[in-house]
Amino acid sequence: MKIHNELPEGNEMASLEPARYFNLGIEQVEQIVEWMEDAKGPTQPLLVHLDILLLLSERYPSVAEDRIYKLDLENISTIFLAWHERNSAKIPTKFREEIKESGIKILEGLKKYWKP
View 1 (cartoon, rainbow, N blue to C red):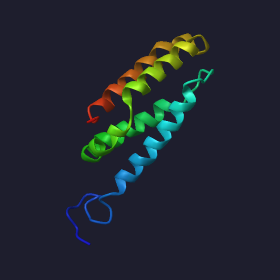
View 2 (view 1 turned 135 degrees about the vertical axis):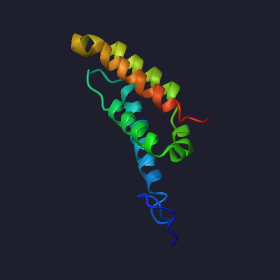
View 3 (view 1 turned 60 degrees about the vertical axis):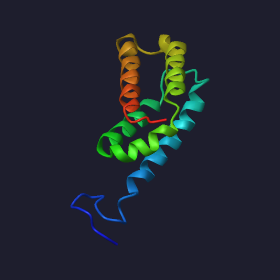
View 4 (view 1 turned 135 degrees about the horizontal axis):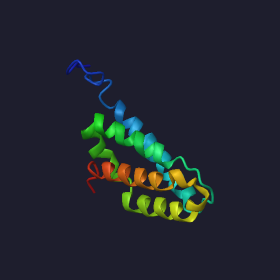
């Protein structure tokens, strides 16, 4: 096993570990999106999972480019916006638009790493 550099992932054993986290996150997002298609409540876990994937993407951009393509970001965006529209009256007014804007911003951030 070789050591390539001083980074936490800078050795052969650790170099593929970030991909495991991407795979887990993508799996979670896919399950949540399926649930959100019909969700009738003002709360959702989608944005935190997407935000975590965005943070991982910023730290490990080459791994992100190899993994994020698996997400159908257009479909996720459509489902998120439909969920928001369907449930916006149940979201406190002071958070309503900020939640929508946050989701759009996170999805736009992920698109930088999305190479279909």
